[in-house]
Image (cartoon, rainbow, N blue to C red; front, side):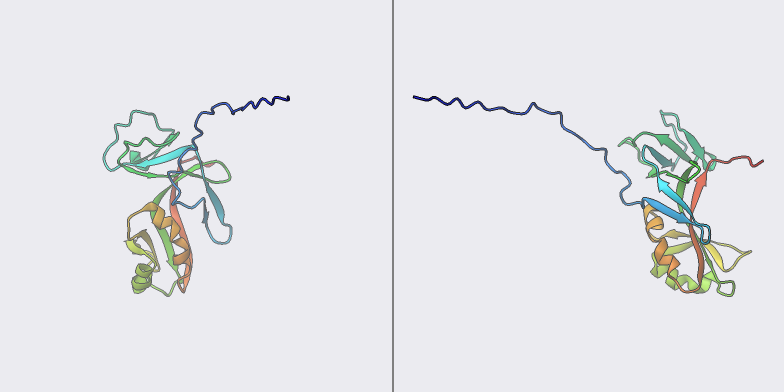
Length: 179
């Protein structure tokens, strides 16, 4: 008589693997700024920006403060308790950190006034945030939703408007002395 022993092996228990949440999945991975000599900005993991509604009493120390203290950049992941607006941080090839503000600059051909293009700008999902008296063919826009992510995602729609010569997001960076 032959006996068979069936021995079952099971793999050791592995701790649950969690991947960090992509808090900024609605933001583009890359932003092209400029026309002829475009600069490519890439989303920088491990950083986030807080756009304060009120003066901050943030417990952690920011790695960068911009716009007279209205925007702070922190290393790590955002805390769930933050009620201010959050955005990702981008870097350019030189490594400088850049934070989108939600404003987008648009410039039409010189003979086209921005005010005459309000309907197509509105149709693209934007509104005029600031007209420029010295350049009636240019203006700062913001997404109608008020969301920074919508402002960045809609840039191709603005660029497709007839007679648009340039469209680029406002990105704030640390001020550096030029020598």
